[in-house]
Length: 193
Image: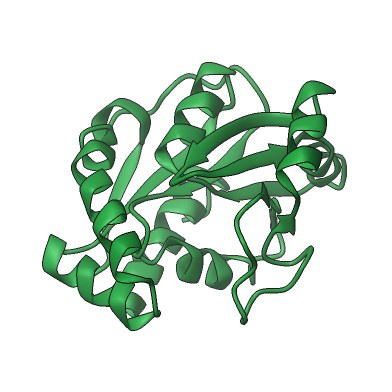
């Protein structure tokens, strides 16, 4: 895919359908000292395995709306009835610390970051097929109705790949997908050979 103009601070964006593996891949990339995760805020309930301030900032809808009204977010999106946003302060802090922010956002978030001029590397993580995506969502305990909602969004998400992303990686085999994304990041964000 073609590189896109860098009009703003450089970032690394990972996006893809829910269940594609982007968060797992992001966790591996965080081992590179040049990257720092940008912690998003959300109104969705915390899952048992998640930690406040590490996985997300879990906010009430009222507090989220207050943050949005006062300009605390760079971008926000509503996904499956829950609000998500990238706190401005966190991204600024990462840049000021000399690191590159790593954002794990949905397609709406990537679109907004592009619109705002954030350049860098945008990688779309996709599952090999819809059946695999269904299986992954079910295995992580997603409620059946929620699985269907997420699968219904799949085609829309897939349709925005060429428009928003520099690269696309299929996550059929996790180790291979991680290696591919690491190579993309090292060569295209940091100039490593």
